[in-house]
Image 1 (spheres, rainbow, N blue to C red):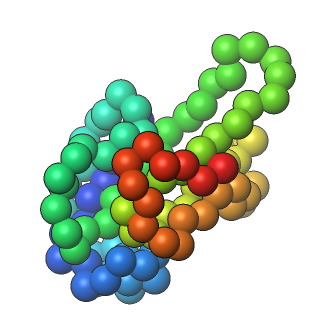
Image 2: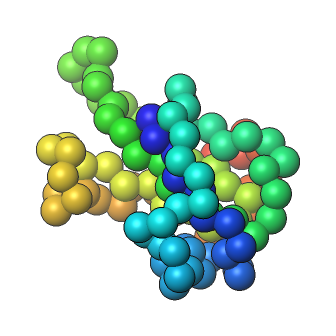
Length: 102
């Protein structure tokens, strides 16, 4: 999973991140992580984007959840392309850690 971080984002919304002068081409940091979980106490005034692939271990229905202490969006694409991605979960108000939107 790739995690990209943009520092000095002037607000909590997805729009604030999208309007940041360095988004999307020049993140402040890029790292490879083993899951979707952001570190605790990362700080304020930053935005992050995770990208990667989910490979289902078996055929069936799967449930995805999302949490954030500000705003967040979760997209899923069955083909791995942006053209086919769908918005499947949204957070518009701060949530406590381990409080989930599905």
